[in-house]
Every structure is written in C-alpha cells, then in structure tokens.
Length: 601
Image 1 (tube, rainbow, N blue to C red):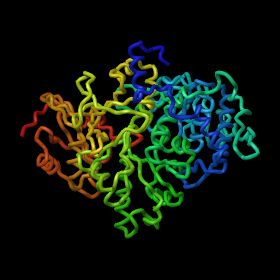
Image 2: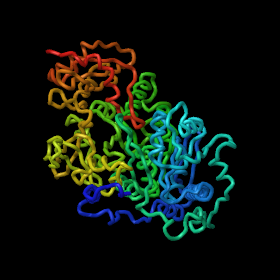
Image 3: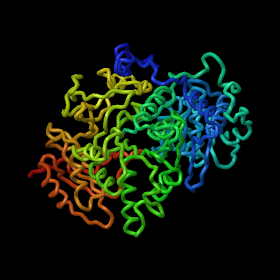
Image 4: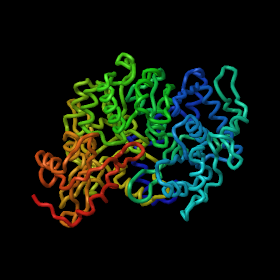
C-alpha cells in the first residue's frame, strides 16, 4: 500500500491514525475480521432477523442471520471457485440498494477482497475512469444496468473504457448466455447448514484455507471514490478495521443494541448507507430495514410497521418529509401521512443526520412540526463515515440550543475512535482556540488507509499528522468542557471577496428566511474587481413568484453590502451528490455574464 509514499508522508499518515496515544495496532474491536462478526451472530442467534429488504414495488424479503450467512458464503464460493477472486483483489459493482448488493459486499469481505461500488448517477466517462483506476477485474452489474455496464467497460462512442474488467456478472433479470449470472450460480450451489441452523460451515468453504488466505482487519474492504466537482475523483481505501471500529463508535454513541432495528434509505454505494445502517446493526447483532429507494409516502408507515428505532438521513430527505407533512396536513390527514399517528411511532428514537448541509431554518421547522430529535453529526468517506454527533443525553431544550442558537447546527462532539481539532487556514499547522475558525482535522483509528495511487493527495491531506477535511469550522465548549464542533462550509466554496472570506452557509440562512424561498444557495462567481463576488441561486416555493430586487433588499437589510448577494439567478433544480450534498461549484457558470461588472452600493 505504501510503496508510492515517501518516508515523511508515511510517518505523518501513521501518526494520523493514533488516538489519545493509542496506536492503531492496539485494536478497539475483539474480532478477527467482518466474517468473524457475521459468523458469530449466525451461531449465537441463527433465527434472529438481520436484513429486511423492500424493493421499489413494496415487496418484502427477510433474512435471518443464519440464512444470510449461508447465502454470503455461497456467493463467496462462487467468487472464489468460478471467478478466481482472491484475497486482495478488487470487485466493482454497478448496482442499487438490494439484498443482493449486500450479499456481494459480504462475499467479498469473507474472501478478503475489496468492494469498489459505483455511483450510477455519475456519467459514463467518470465511472469508466473509476473502474480503470480501481484495477478491478470483475464487475457485478444489475440487469437494469447491464447494457450500460458493457458500454462503459467496452469504451463505446470513442470513449476510453475499462479493459481491466475481464468479467461482467449479471445480477437479477432473466438468464442471459452472454453473461455469467449471479443468481444461477447461487441456485446451482447447495446451501450448507449446521444442525443448529447456524449457517454455512466456515470450515467447509475453500475461502477458509489456512495461511495467508485468511482475511485480517488490515485487509482492504472498500475503495470508494470522492464525489468532488473538480478534478479526477480520489479513491479512498478503507480496511475491515475501519468499518468495524467506526461501527463500534456509532453504536456506542447512540446506545444501539442487538434488540434494536435501524432503517437504510440512503444509497449503499456510499459509506453512510453501508456503515451506519448495515455494518453498525451487524456489529451489535441488530437488524436493518433496507429500502431500494427513499419513498416519502412509505417512510413513516414502514418505520411504524417494522418498529424501527433509528434512521440515517441527509438534510434533503428531511426537507422532503417536511413538505410531505405540510401537504398531508393541508389535505386533512396526519402529518405522517395515511393512517400513521404519533402513537404508532412510540418506539422511534431519533434521526441520524449528516453528509449534507443542515440549515438552522430546516432544523427548527422540522423539530417544530414533528417534535422528533435530529442527532446531527459529521464525517467523510476518509474518516470511514461519522466522526462526531450531538450527545444523545442532552435534554430537548439543550439539544435545540445547540441546533439553532449559534448560527449553525452543531455537529456535536467526537466519537470514541477519533479526535478532532481546528487548525489554522494559513498552513502553519497551528491549532486554533475555542471560537476561532479554521480547518476541521481528524485523527484516530477510523481514518482511511489513504488515497489509492495518489501520493500527492496523501502528502497534502496528512500534512500536519492529522487528516485535513477541507471543511471550515470552529468549536465551543459547554459547562463541563466538552467541545461542540460546528461546520461553516467547504474551504474551496468559501467566497473570497477582495481578500475577505465569507461562508456561504451564513448567507444561505438569510436566504432561507425569506418568504417564498424553497432553496437558496450562495455562489462564489469570478469577478474582475474582487476576485470572487457573491451570487444567489434561488429555487422558489411552488406557486410563488419572487423578484430579484426583494431578495437583494432583504439580504442587505440583514447583512453588509460586501457580504450580500449582488445577483440573483432563479432555477428549478439544484445539482446534488447521491447523498444530497449541494454542488455549488456546478452553478458558477450561471453567473459568468457578470464576471466583468463592478457592483456598487
């Protein structure tokens, strides 16, 4: 892994994995690998439900730990014997949320192979680059995407393909002689159960050979690619220990136990969906409800029916739920839709929310309408998933203060596997004191192994012996000395107007407070006079007509001229990542015609 690193960078990366003086070799989890965790629960609680899956037609499938363990080992045997996949190999997926996708992931981890999941919302050229860069030789493609996968791999229309992919395996759909079929392969392999229904015999499968074929916690588990809007995506390497130790941290923080059930509505090609609502329930022996896609009309009913305690969401989904509740209320139904009433949700504990920009306005309105707790947190793919959360022991009043009283909803305090700090933006490597803004940095056992084949990116990201997140923020201390962190925006998205930097989130809170504004984004656009100038991209609420002048006037009534938007562009859609993060940089082109204009008071 580190053959392309200079010794200084390698040393800094090692230091960034130490937490409170505890080196990463001092494991915080008692397991040998992910397979060990799955097999343990299959033996101890074979009949307990591990996975419930709802497809787009609302069809439900349920898998006990024993059944899932057996199927995962069948899939691992198919990969090992028929596809020649070995420990250390990489396996790509072009898929969506499905029980089969989860099986493929676990089969890879049983072998010790790495999953390189693709985001199907990306364009073909980008996926082809990722497939080439990952060096995967096998790609599992769902039937819906089979033609597209073949086109991407083959390099259609003069585009560069991914010649390293030697085999495409079809998942689902009717049998096809042109491709190996995942389901046909499993159907032709007998399932091996122990007498006590504990699942496939671990000693009966060839992937359990002794010696160097046995996966360890150091084996790579995921190769996920960043969804940045500029430059080539970077491959983030997460090992099996990263996944398990971050799951431990999430479970401990939220008091998640084996008798609880979580629900996944986020895409499982991303670490949030994988870590929070698949690996974390697995770690504690709990259950998870996997949805093929988010459905606002089924959301509350499914929580009530399956008795879900915790759901992981992004702010975009909270906005959808808020709008749905308002419409249901106007139609004379309950805010939860259909026949669902608050008593049906008595078992529900809270939302986990991160991976996007949560505004104070949305946090306040959601709490006011639903009276449900949002446990706001923060993390990145590079830190496996979450690095901090608001404490669950806060009273409702204290929780709301941290959510709405400081200009930004707090992202909370560091979880056990990692530490956090604020570093100066001037590159000096100095830590900033309470209340001062700087770059959020993280170090600990859940920090990635590194960027794949990117020594330049590794040298930059680990410059100060911490992982540099690229996000600006600050922290405040409570009465007992706990550090509560806040994020004020991506450093690359800060608006640098004439040497004075403004956070887009500050401006967006004002925009969202204007009647009739559904989405308001502050955009830094190129300007001859100030370098950056401030623009506003606004999506009005349905049926609302807004004039640029009233938006500009309202902003200037609450902010200085320098900080206020100078131009308003209206639109209907906002570019977002698959996890709901706004992609502000993609909107800059809309403001290009004002590049040479000087704005005066």
